[in-house]
Length: 295
Image 1 (tube, rainbow, N blue to C red):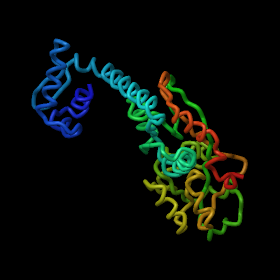
Image 2: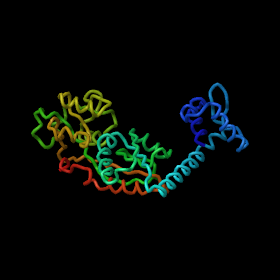
Image 3: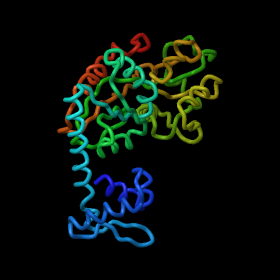
Image 4: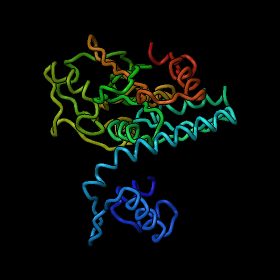
């Protein structure tokens, strides 16, 4: 089934063989064996490999079979060793700024545990969860799959970030009128919908005239540091710079902008002992969070 799914994904036996560290004849033989078992062709072998209707129908079942096999392997491993690996998927803000501290706290308690992390956009992270490539998704974006188990574990604030040399640096918050003629530095349009909606409601609309889109949080912080505009970021992403005194994070008076971070799992997923212990850490932010920044 693993060979079939690789071939279906890549539409090429040679690429599937390379991905699985097999020879191309071995892949072809495995597919032929499956076709003989089912009594039908799974691929149309032409200039470009294509799935037949039977092959298309097999994909969700192949994923389920492979998922059950992986789960059985994990259970057997855990019973034997008392330890099992954890595959975590995280969206960018959590993966780059929150998850390292969570894992450090977890590793202090369980130093022999093995964790693998994949960082991506929320949509891609949830898809990896759906495809059983990860055990847990930690995301800040909306989760639209209603059948998934979604539990908020913490909330972060969207703030306005300026250089510590900025005239506003001595202030604790901003007023709406302060922002009317300002230029904003953002990751990309839609990256902070909460800020866009809040500002829009107050008559300040983010557009190509008053924003610069920068595809990196690190670069956005640098833009703010050299006073190229007011950055819109999660407070967690600037905690080190705020502590060091190079940047200042300001709230919008009367309009708090908070967003939940979420722990997401598939229903009926076998929860290993290690995942249970990791969840305890995640849901105890006092063990990994510097609370002073959020007061």
